[in-house]
Image (tube, rainbow, N blue to C red):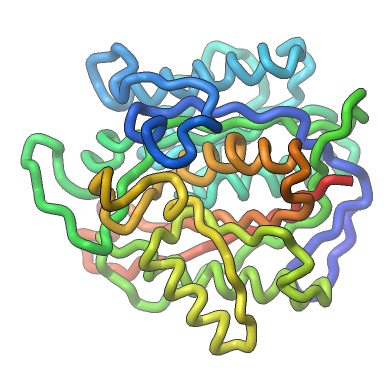
Length: 336
């Protein structure tokens, strides 16, 4: 059973194997710097007549691809941890409603991938679950429609704004020792909510950056680790602006870290016009299950601290002038 170490980190006692990961993305993501690491490309509308239905199709197709790639019988999936950005997680619900497996709907905003990994890992470590699927999605058009402006208005984007990633990422975690070596989740650090009174919905990186910095600091402090213990410390989707702010906060607290960010990596902002980079639940999910998984399997990296970040806001809270709460969850993944 997992043991709590320090203030907020849990070290797993049982090996939790990251057996497989898949990701399906839209055209813009496939054309970006990491395009070759993504499994499949689909149009943003996925042949549907609404953006919400399109996102549900991304979820459905990604889940099916994960089962096929993992060569696992669906009945062996004990539960699914999944969510998205839309109200009541309708994309996830509609995309998974036909599979008949136990389902936990999560809303951690863009931190949902790490949140699902933490919850699934702790249940597997406790012995109650053997196989769990973690999945999340987002769609540029459905997110813009809900949180900002309808696409038809053609609003100009602010320099600090981020481009919501279209796609879905999923992975299979298991207690069963695989025939071939695969990465293992070693420890997890659930994040705390942080509110720095940021109210600009076009600058979510600023709202999430302090939460990311504090979670990274807590993880390293709890386990008495130096930053160079990890080959890669990667945040979820702070983007270019948020990453700089996060590094500044860390430096003020005595940690000079050359970190990476999924939102900064997934697009070429100059060539693709994505301003401060990528965002959305799918941003960290597809980078994790595409690029990072490949690098771990190639042993190009062996220890990764994955810190997905989320802006806990809603259209209602934004219209009422409420500040944006930031959250960040950390997962330590290593080759063993």
